[in-house]
Image (cartoon, rainbow, N blue to C red):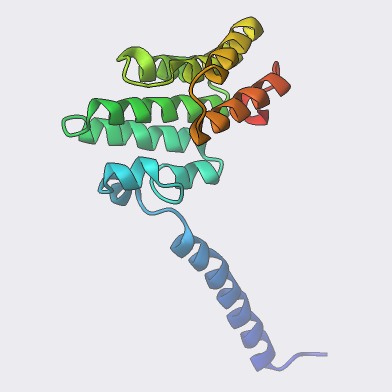
Length: 175
């Protein structure tokens, strides 16, 4: 039985509408262009959990997040404070580790503490120890953090060290 023309036309319109709603909403709700990310303040780009490079990390695009941070560093290097560069270096290490790029992660983690501005280098060293499969060093760094003055931040650092110990020998993303 032949369907009336309006039935076929309606199916085409419905299919086109569904495609527009699906793809249009993803494009609308998705990350802003890299150009827009480059215009964000450091606070927006690096420190907020729902903007900047973190939008890409949440989507699982770890290499894209790293590339975006590298572009941001390149574009803003003259205006970023040293501690801001250290923060970006640490976050570069983190996303490279999540991407399974061990050597790049270790490079950026080391770079983040090279200027001796971070108040807790043992925290960063713990990440390096995990990536280098050095459990005794990871345990020593965890002990060093535990001996510091207690704070909410230190409690979070210890939870991360404990997760790395629990998942020791597995991919970074598991920990």
